[in-house]
Length: 395
Image 1 (cartoon, rainbow, N blue to C red):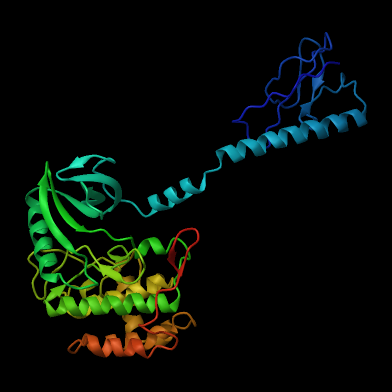
Image 2: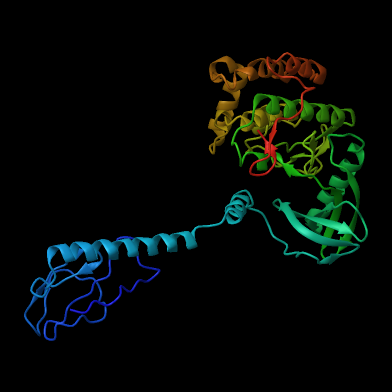
């Protein structure tokens, strides 16, 4: 009997072995046919059964090999088949670069305006896309002969967005000259877009949750401490940010400090000229969830939710159902000792107690910062703890 080489197709499933059947008349082995169940060949009257010997399916009446030959052939063919399958799986296995790209895509559910690398936009040349939001998109860009890159924030210009754009630039201008606030360089119009020129930052906090998923207490405390210092500066300018979450707080390249960005929702206290609604957002204070006017203390409450997110406990305040979400937040602030029961989150109890005491009284940034300085194992003077693998990130 002449055995033909095993034909293998890359799309074949792991357990779908090819079938080679013997021609009952000539004794020759024809080309592989599809795998079949028991049936009778009307031409030769031989019942075929699917008897697996390695990668072969043989006819009961025409298997001329001995059991030992069957076994040896089966082992060789099975090994070859397994090697081919392994090779094919390795070819189909995504590279590390593709994995990282896929992870980035998980966090990027935003609009895409389609600017490409080396495209000219005014005096700037696009280098890469940085990210985006519901109605805006940011790109890294560089001026000719300039040493540093900037972030260009593109917003489609229309009647609805014009008021938002004017407000954002007004808030940015007013908030300048602080290390923890993103630098605003100016703006210009390009085709149908209004472009805001900003300081380019290394990454946002959301990206840091891709690596360890949760951060060390020192890092969580330092992020919150610096954010409150930034809010204290904004408060001195009578500015409420109103949209503090992991995607709007950034890190500098050397991981020395945070920077508060995205002032698209920011306004002066007790003003709601933009007529924005925040009642259904999980990173917003439960006061505002219930319809109360946004105040300085509500930005501080968002910092508490930010900390819980960074230690992996966002489930303690977040819920898709609004009434349940409000209930969770109220329970957290009214009885933090009953909610924060893990060693990893107990350090937040005195912070939440202080914030709760300020909800119905005048807020005090210094009093809250003093509570942070008393957290065991935390010092605002210590640097951020980082790791360099696979890329530099917070631990």
